[in-house]
Amino acid sequence: MAYPAPGDFKDVVLFLATAGIVVPLFRRWRISPVLGFLGAGVLLGPSGLGALAAHAPWLAELTINSPRELAQLGELGVVFLMFMIGLQLSWARLWLMRRYVFGLGTLQVLGCGLIVGLTAYLLGASPAAAAAVGAAMALSSTAVVMPILTESRRQHVQAGRVTFAVLLFQDLAVAPILITLSLLGREAGAGLSPDLLLSFAPAVAAVAALVGFGRFFLRPMMRSVAKARSEELFMAACLLVVLGSGLLAAFAGLSMALGAFVAGLLLAETEFRHQVEQVIEPFKGLLLGLFFLAVGIGLDVGLILEQPLQIAGVTFGLMGLNAALIFGLARGFGLKWRPAVETALLLAASGEFAFVILGSAMAQGLVPDALGQSLLVSATLSMMCIPALAALGLRIAGRVVPGVAEASGPSEPGKGQILVVGFGRVGRLVGEMLDRHGLPWSAIDQDAGVVERGRRAGHSLYFGNALRPGFLERCGLDSARALVVTADAEGDDVVAVEALVSLVRDRRPDLTIVARARDSRQALRFYDLGVSDAVPDTVEASLQLSEAVLLGVGLPAGPVIASIHERRDAFRRELNPRDGLPS
Image 1 (cartoon, helix red, strand yellow):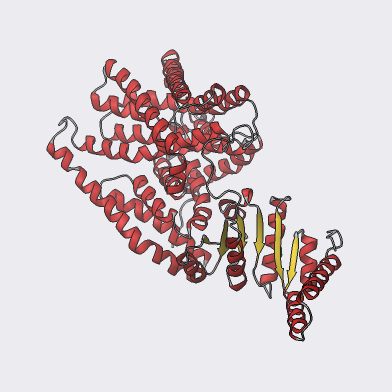
Image 2: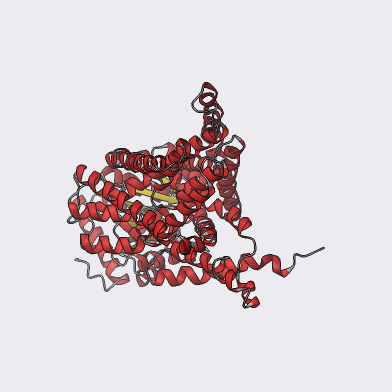
């Protein structure tokens, strides 16, 4: 068997080493790792260490040898990003933010696209090139802006919500833009014709086929895989869905990103949504890092040195135009000037889809390479400015506690619910009592059959492993009012339940946690781990038996119920003397 030469893995090792250095370091500095990957790409590319290799040959070992192959693999990062965007959408969320998504977002994309496109046309670009340039430069960076909002805890203030709404529409607009560019590329020079309009038919048929397949086969397939209770098999199925839907769209002449987006939408309303997010997130992050590394490698530093004034003018001109337009639109939609300024600064720079759209347009001959490369350099430089723009916006807007000064506006659906881990017999009874008192709740279970039956009954259930912190966060742990652990802690499950309680208590010291225990000894252990209340099965069974026999022999109900409650409180004080419950 012939093994690959060590040099064949050099690019992969360099990338992994870069990820291991960039991500922790930039997170510690509270800067988006995307900027680190862009900078690392410049350093490891031909414009960085590669340019010095002629004078110091050993530096060649620290440069990327095959940037084209790396870029092709990195493009999967955009595919995974579009899948995750589709997966995170829901009709309820869209409806809550409809005014900003379809109003402000539409006007921003159309307004900026028309102004930039018209400017490019007046400067000599063809109509197709002007349209591609306008569409590409009208889109901001979801991959950089959203992590910044999350890390600064401003995703739920008014500026954060409006920014997300506009980014959401921009992401939705990518698929139609790519379809249009693809069709314009096929019919370059032909203009609008019946043949061009008819060429939309295969695209529509392909999307319809994806939707039909997803509706009838996707959920049954995921249920079958989930019933196998194999994390490896579930991961393989998730990757198959992303790549399979992307390849199916590519075979129909569409973009892989569009196919993955449709697949994400189809999974968004299923019980597997959060578990799929948890599985796909590491792949998306790693491949997006590879994508931005390739973008940095492709940055033509020589062009910046040759045309510094032109590049700077285009970069800051586009950011100024976009910021001014968004500020005016935001004020028109009722935002006060401080949130409007913050929103405008967050969305002023170009985004990752500029590389996708311009790359596609250049590959199809719609945009000249010289113009495209100049705009890609400007887009890269503007993205590097996003952290500074965000910091400036935060300083101008002032730090506002979410939900206090800016409570108005669309909020996240499902906030303040109660999470129930385990939906067996006890979990169902807990859900019924919560429904009776009008409290919103969601449940988590690893049994696909239990989840399927619960969702058929109209309950909010999700399939997944509650021991994964990312999964719990996606289920709403950070905003939950309480957590109820109903799993029967016996055998190996004892360790899992204790690990879950410890995990949640570390994450949410203030959260009310109620756990089911097998006996008093286990309840004592749960109290040591930080639960608010532990309910032993043996104690509750003995109290219910006592109540039944006392009532059965004819004692008055009032004194019997009072004595049962008194004894229950005494048990709680014995198990958790720090609680100080009233007697």
